[in-house]
Image 1: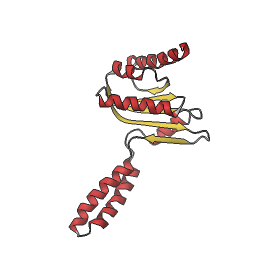
Image 2: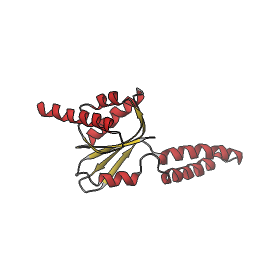
Image 3: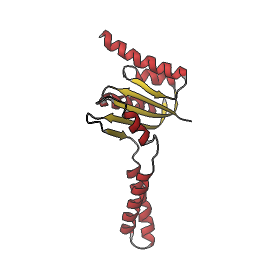
Image 4: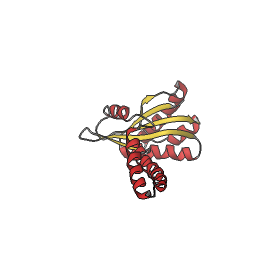
Length: 168
């Protein structure tokens, strides 16, 4: 079972840096992330989602491959690739994997203009090591399905960053 975590940051670059740290920790096998997206509330109130999972592009690539193979059977691989890519792109666009886009947009509407939220779908993690990696990031927890122990560790790590900034 995965945990959902939403952390608000004052700016988009801070949220992107936190996501980059999380993904670096994933390469070190300290955390397994199912999805990591950043939502930015623009000054005009619109929401911009920056996701790492792009189902439309993946669907188009997969569809083109399968379309080419099927097209070879009918001696027209280019037409098969084109039809397969179009079909795959539509299927990818209609499928929503990871964190629900509508949910992310609704949560991002509660942000102030210019703020960004990092959405994480965490499958498993080494809590202490991940919290050490997030030390110095700032931000505030908006939503979490972590148990109290993990959430307190995260809150302490984020609050520690604010204390360091205030002392400087």
